[in-house]
Length: 375
Ligand code: GDP
Ligand code: ZN
Image (cartoon, rainbow, N blue to C red):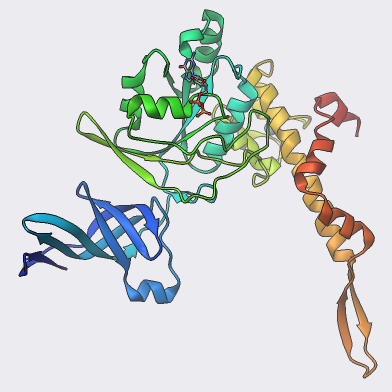
């Protein structure tokens, strides 16, 4: 718990407690930590290194052994050492970032058209990752009253925060800045919705790695560049914004079918009272969710569409694991010992050539609920 101030060769020792900072960038073995509005270049304490602990961007870390080096009265370096990493609230792989407070789901009113299924999918991705979704309706210079009414009725009524922006006409930018202040945020949404334009409009010095998610459902590319958190000040309030869009892959392959409904916040109060503990709130008898919500809404319809997608992934994964098991055989060696032989059959080889995405696109041909019911 000490700090050294190297002032043109002068060393000043200061008492300092371990302080809580946030990793905003990583470069080789250096972790850049935002603490007290300064960026500190930190090494990892050797004990953590030995344990194999690796901080991620967004990690809340305790830092110590502060060193401020000045040369000719100009501060040349702030350095410190990371002594521990706090438990993460959430973490994403792509982009590789932790402790995100909120995902700003940038949705456009036209080009690409407003798509409630896609919006609900991004909401599910946020909720399932324990990240608060904020709906940002961009290109609101082109919104019509019917669409605004639909959005208000469907999303505001169930408690989602909504901001209307126009990056083009500089509208709603203060609302967006307020939402971003004092939080760690990722912007997400399909390409063309206006994420880069918004980032640019709120602060021209910021930039966003663009176009990770295509306009089509489920396809994605991700950038190889490492994510970093950009520090921006709006009216003296600090915002940390990831410079890579969130959820590069918008597939729901990590969600179990019986968990999906928990990501629809208006369903959750009713789920525990369904007759079946693994109720999918679809065809099951005595479903308390269906009894209490309006099943004529786009939300419920989108729930069913996403459920089909999730069930499709489960079907593929189950088929794969049962195929895998059937290929393990016990054979006897010449010396009499039993050995385990894993035989890759022609079907398994065939499967390994096909990606989950290809298989899903086949399932996707049966997008209507009626088709599924015939199975
Ligand atoms: P991104 O792929 O999500 O980063 O989207 P961009 O920021 O690249 O924007 C895609 C297109 O939409 C560009 O041609 C922008 O000029 C346009 N655009 C962005 N924001 C707005 C807006 O608020 N209103 C209108 N009319 N066009 C916009
Ligand atoms: Zn149910």
